[in-house]
Length: 69
Image (tube, rainbow, N blue to C red; front, side, top):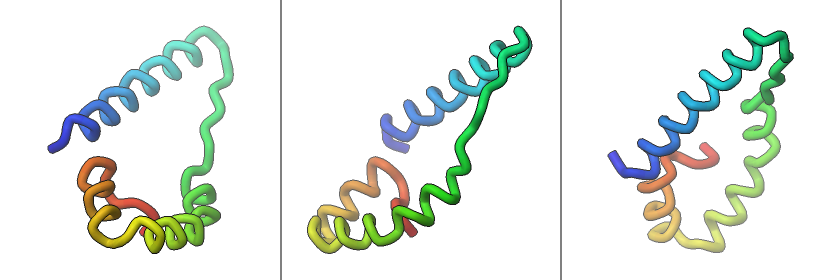
């Protein structure tokens, strides 16, 4: 697994524990509806996948994981 993906997982864990800590102190933590964002970005990813080309997009996804599918 690439370091970027490991770092992303680590940051997600830090964020989750931070949200839990804030909630335990009475602070409301809002979370975004990720699926609605991804649905709106579908055409954006299609355009950039075409501009970047297949090889570049595969390289990007090798570091970032699957994008826009």
